[in-house]
Image 1 (cartoon, rainbow, N blue to C red):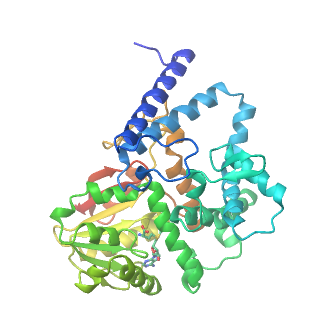
Image 2 (tube, rainbow, N blue to C red):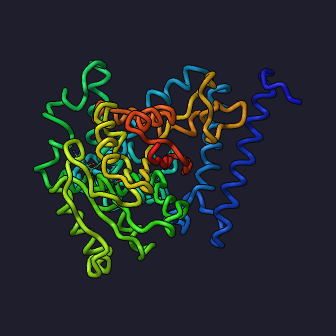
Length: 415
Ligand SMILES: C[S@@+](CC[C@H](N)C(=O)[O-])C[C@H]1O[C@@H](n2cnc3c(N)ncnc32)[C@H](O)[C@@H]1O
């Protein structure tokens, strides 16, 4: 058996993971019947818009984990540290590109410098000196795309908060840049900001592959779903379209529900017409959701809150649950980098050696979201054990975990 403590054996193992995971990803593309995307494709591949890409994402998580580890071992540390420094500035480059459409009088050579730097990573292609074409990667950044909207939000707001964190790590970055109250207070009366935020939630869902839960949870055996903190119905609108038997309740702050109704009218008018969806305003810190439904679903809600508020939200839901009700908490879950006695894996995947057990750089999206939650809400992503403790504190027990790679859906029932 190979001894992975041997430096060279470790390199060989990483190379072999890179090879097998890349081949797995290639097979996923080929399975669609449309072949693999080319490096400078100018249109999207059909798999780019699929709602269930778990197999592809699993392969990419291994690929990213292995190649980052391999290059960190082989590159001089002075080289790798530069990549770390680019962590936030990368996002700022996206900002420049996003604004490019409006900024017609941006200096031409400076514009070209930005595009050229981005093209190193496959975002734009320099077809001749100073002439750039879109690629599949630059197209997704257009502000008209939901993912582009999410990237824009990060570039414009989150990177500002990151700079504050750098200056004064002990403050809540969001407040330090002059914002009052909570993030939700700040966007409450600003229609444009709210619209941008909720569109970026659509983008986040596309980027993190959260819609896979539409394919993997047994929705056929469920009658009623409450989308708690539904936003504009990012989850519940496609759910209603895929499962016409479901009765759905959308609950969020009143101003958000008004927006949600407009989106439903456009995207799922049939559900409105036949009365399958109701809109019930809720402040989940102060009141309880509608009573006795089968599923209470919270996507990217619990991670917005510290433990005290998260517990209040769950306790309010627990009060109205019937004996067969379940709570589905859908968030990123932080896998542990070291195995610790007393903490099992709860059936969660761990990466093959020598990749770090939490997939290393392959898990950077959940870890990046964790930092974002800190910057914006002074909140966090959690480990599975931390979510279990939250549930147990209000009498809920974990019954099932659906691993969607970047996010997980954790099902809880009354303990
Ligand atoms: C990160 S967004 C997630 C939206 C949606 N679940 C999704 O996946 O796109 C969090 C949601 O919580 C809502 N929210 C914040 N504070 C709330 C409160 N006190 N009561 C009810 N909803 C609240 C926000 O309006 C927002 O729609």
